[in-house]
Length: 233
Image (cartoon, rainbow, N blue to C red; front, side, top):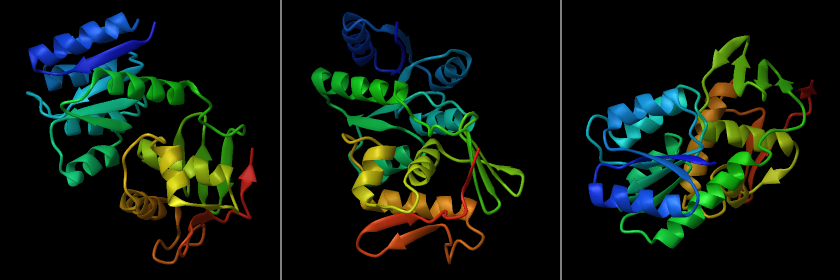
């Protein structure tokens, strides 16, 4: 049975979510305190987390950041009453997979949960275990990146983007395709989010991020990963 953690401190909303998700056949655990929820999420193998932004103890942004830094990759769907784009962008950049703005319809929420669960169980990695290019080694089984033998921390979105580029080495990938592949086709995000993540990714894989060798921009079309010297294991 799919196990969902609902992190919501408003009792009425929490109860409504719990009842609705249980009727859909999910196993549901509800926690109203951010710090407690963060500990629980690190101890238990949840299939998905519904995470409110405004919480006592720790807010949703802090929780999302900590879980991703701990290497946990379960889908995170953020629930927010905030409508400012900058705050939505912040959640996505910290590793959230999607968000829903309050008030939301239960029908929309169910659809987004199902979409995230489908993507999380689908094939996420290339058939090979490891790719090397230049001084960089990408280990898909461990979800790790090493540069010059040193471990480099990637956010879940950065890892998804790098995986897409390696799968499609030598092909131009549009921003729309990258958004769909890394964030999901039904997720709101702007081209600026893609560009910001590409810039961060370059800092971790390029010898000279200001003059990228591997991950290049193709003006008006998107990005291309040029790994002619890529080695597969």
